[in-house]
Length: 256
Image 1 (cartoon, rainbow, N blue to C red):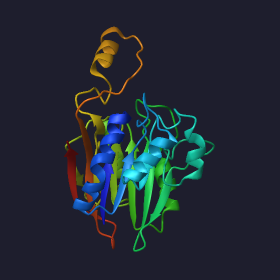
Image 2 (image 1 turned 60 degrees about the horizontal axis):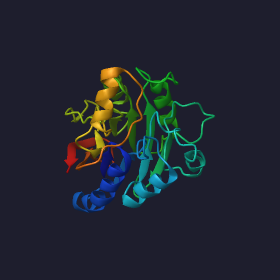
Image 3 (image 1 turned 30 degrees about the vertical axis):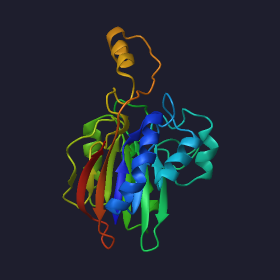
């Protein structure tokens, strides 16, 4: 099975570019399943039901999120009604949505887990414990994919080794900068610390550069506005053995 994981989609520039390039890319590369992190798809971050529908129509099979998942109140009911959009599993059980799902591909069942890091992030439940609990619910899934939305590279690396051999692939999101450490860990888990992002390439994490420069220069609050201009799409392809669930190949991608 070939899995495509795509990094954080930022604003209209990001969603438009996904729609323009993903369908053809899926066909050319023979992608069987696509996971997209969409938590910044709405203007000024967050994600709306309309953004979700656009990403699904563009070729997403599962949408993952992160710390901005509850920024848009109109998403709350949508999370409850749709199993294929996830919020991090280590949010309290009382919050809308689910932290994992199962995609039945007929020949194989694929589990997807969404986790949120806690280093330099909000003080949520322990993501390592949440991962163990989620895996119990996905015991009949031969292939398991994990989106770990986290700030610290060390926390992502640690999670990779913690889940090595227990999941098929673990990909980091949140920092919006693609890392060059794609690999297969010793136990057979495909890994990359961060997928990168989809949005305007000449930006600061998808935001207009002048806004971010002024914020860092003055330390005054600023309203984030997605940058415009030439877009790019970052992500990673994982080839996974359907009989064993082990990753056999990893390929980092960047489309312009």
